[in-house]
Image 1 (cartoon, each protein chain N blue to C red):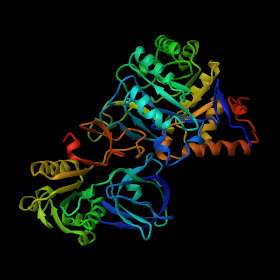
Image 2 (tube, one colour; image 1 turned 30 degrees about the vertical axis):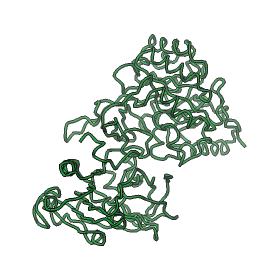
Image 3 (cartoon, helix red, strand yellow; image 1 turned 180 degrees about the horizontal axis):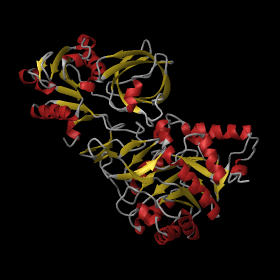
Length: 304
Length: 254
């Protein structure tokens, strides 16, 4: 038997495999396909203070080895989450975390404070990196000052695990990571989607209603891996790696680069069972490489 | 209804015309209940440039042989590659997805399909016929040589054809067929190009006919996780994959 358990500070994950916000609904959508308790955790769809309709259709365009999305944080608001959704998902035997987003600092704070009261939610992922909303979102995550402000204010009201999701659309992601660590973030997750666009040459029209959108899938993996490696060296808090992970081999690469845990995103759309297959694949890798504890692989890239 | 992910085997390929083909795919196990209007999301493994699954209408179901028939139009890389699969190839299928058409009882029903939109209407006509409805099916194509096999529909109702060039049946679009002015209907069901479906919706509203349409928005997951395939309804954005693909036109902003 190998040990797959990892810790994000005080938050214990039975294995390092989580699923990424916006690709996993509220978990329930996957209950026909997998046993959710096999996961280290999952992060539910981005939740905001108030109901958001999101962006108009079309919101998605397939690209080479990936996809662009411009969903725009469609959700029914935090009150709906607390009253209607939470009771349905609170008893899943895994870490159920909520991705929290907003357009002004006050919205982040109020949303986080309401989720702080939910006993079965052990942490939130603060989304300061959504590229698909006109106000807020990524704007908070692209300057150290605004990233510090939103994390500092949320930290005052949120007492459990505070993960901060970073944007890759910056010059130096390590400076943002250090800034949020300085304000009390318990972990950072990266990367959110890369800002991109697509045009239909025949019609000369953009493929997304918003013109630009967030790129995800295996095409972003080398960028994500590089950023995880850089951030893992720059901060002392745990790093959660994501960006184009399609299989266990990809997941191991992120762990070797310094990720304590990983998230599966876009791959869930193509294979709704991929997350549990990756748990099994990591175990197989460890047996094959005679590694008894997953923690021995974290940051174990061989540069010699 | 529980959703499944299963491997199917391609057992039959039938070319219908230059644009359309039919795939018969066979499951290893007994099929679950599948309702008319539901769809499958298939992985295109024979083309590495196709990243996402492709949602396809269910054309017919044979429970005895565990076979699902898919009616496919070559639209882009994904559907083109599906047409190049070999007999015996494996297809990963996520199904059954989406809601279903309503099945009234003992009513006069009108089914209008254009081009690839005929796909879900065969299985629907079977259910409508079994529930004692009078079934009229209008299939619209550009020209006689684009025509699909009409024989399959005939056991379930009256089959009418329109062609844009007049080479078969009545000349014009399916929504211009004389039966729409000469007879009255209680229900209409339609699938096909959006302008055609909107014309069916307009006819239905004007004549007080209950109308359901099958939408075909682009999808990533097909089961309500990504929120990419939304359509703007009177109650806000709804996922076509889970709250559709079948919508009553009174809920749409058409």
